[in-house]
Image 1 (tube, rainbow, N blue to C red):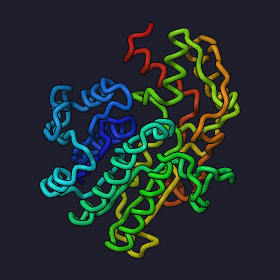
Image 2 (cartoon, rainbow, N blue to C red; image 1 turned 90 degrees about the vertical axis):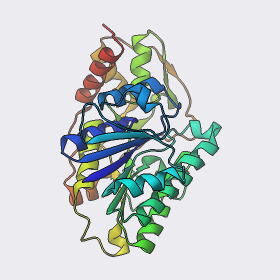
Image 3 (cartoon, helix red, strand yellow; image 1 turned 30 degrees about the vertical axis):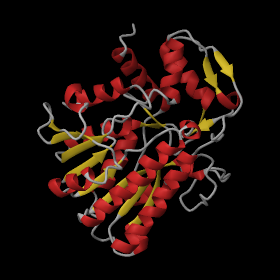
Length: 342
């Protein structure tokens, strides 16, 4: 198939592109390479996909990979209402995997406009392009943050998600509502994936795995919020990618009614891990004890996440299988290599 992957320079997007190319698909990657976190890491990911920094830095330049004959990249804003439709018209995509978004719960408190531009206006642009260019399937990133103040554990997709506690979460809930509308009105399949705390090699510097490892290596204290009384459904990147690619590759022809066309799934490890246990795994593989700075809960954060992935297991035979210890070891090995830490 020919697949558009937005957010291709991002953590999950980069890995999804890699796996799709290994599976023999033609992939076009799109990213605006914003500076929410270190852009050098984004360029380094793209270099792994055969796109040079010089080429990737130029807006609207469509560059072919030097490594993968079936991969190309274009730097573009999702909300560009002239350029994105032109890309769809010229490339004739079969499937769109929309992983691009302004990420971050805490950042949304200080920079709300960015989330409306990328996550609302940008997503509408994606939906309109899918509608007018007869895309067979739109797979898009939602988030576990949509559960907000929901207290039922584990989180299930039939739970109420009307109490978001960050603008990021509200934008992701909006994406799900918008996708439902387009599936209903224009009869094309959409599948939303509520990601649960993804970690692994090439991971984001603003996420716990990276922050903790980086601080411990540098001999700095780590910030442990809610005095360590947190739990997360930490999910290793390979398990996430396996699920995403399986969804992309599955035939959607049998999906005909609105209930079938519009789907939302949790995608996680199906197991809540205490934050202090996660930190202990990092300490074990680094051979160092962390200096812990205990802090109260931050605004917009939740104490626990835990994904019920029963429906994803049923419909796609999804099986997360990477133990925390193995995943943490893989991340630390990558971190040491990338940053030349002995």
